[in-house]
Length: 193
Image (cartoon, rainbow, N blue to C red):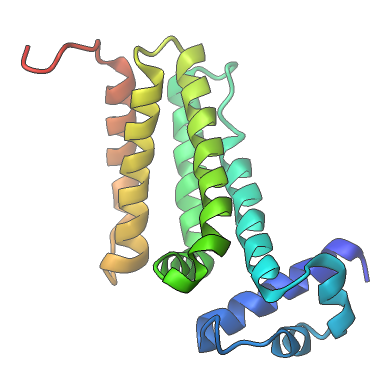
């Protein structure tokens, strides 16, 4: 078995079990059994179940970074934002199970130390990427506007993943794109003017 295939089998099994029976009720033995791999293989990659969980989050981070990759200087900001938002909305749909689980884990005080750092790294990497795009496109106040755009995307994700059973994700995409373009196009004015 190729090394990355074994690791992915562990991630898939862990996700399934964490989701179905909860993180704390799941054992490493159950994960390796569901993955169809030896118990020793999990320890080739991870020193503990907590490290496996952090690895699962890091794997999602790599996938999220690939979502951000399409935005380039060559296409222009509007075309790049369109590509990025399409990839982001697709990511929400394809990774829904994991993202819902991750939100649940974030709220568990016992796991705060395990999940906080990988999630912080992901948020900072995405923020730096979007801020860089905005800087290259000469958008005023790129850091603030990158944070606003990411907050908007986080809100959409939260509503889709946890708040509403039938959130209209597809119909929200053009509205989010319009808001993103508007955010980048408006000249900044001081509040109250």
